Image (cartoon, rainbow, N blue to C red; front, side, top):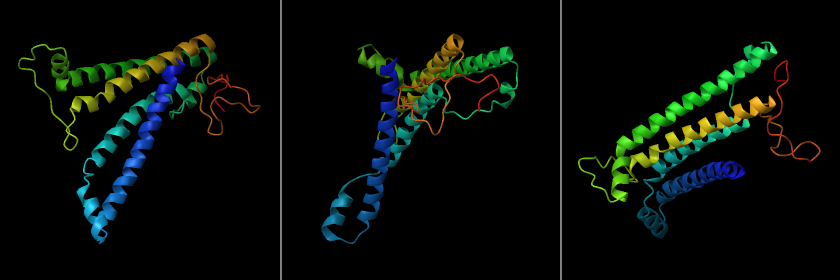
Length: 212
């Protein structure tokens, strides 16, 4: 499980950093190409960054989908739990389980619909072509405007991110059933470290009277 956790964090970090660098280079290129410097201007104009904006959009979409799953695991999503915290202990636990199960069901449905969408959007043609099967009348599927990538590859973020969120909801629900704890984010807390320097529990218990 630690491997999946680190992979999730690496993907988010890479996408965020790469998108930031790419946007910075694209802005420098745009303003630098307008500078009346003979050699530099000609060289910058020979570079084509028209695809940069499109790629950054896709990177932020993928980052958002994987970041949502990370948010479920660490408990950083914004939630209104005033009513739940005022319920009796037994009802509060049931309400939390219903909420987690609802999240798992919803993200599972979105992931399944996403798989169906990308399959009909050109993935079936790509799979048949990769396996050497006769594609017949299957459409090859559209491509993106600037990068000319198959759109089903870009839209794969929907099922992958949704299924990962579904898994995280189930993981949190299982942990809650076993320990009664749910992930809770503290803005002043450094993950993995407690005040005395020892490793802390990423799933702190929820007080009976509610979160404080």
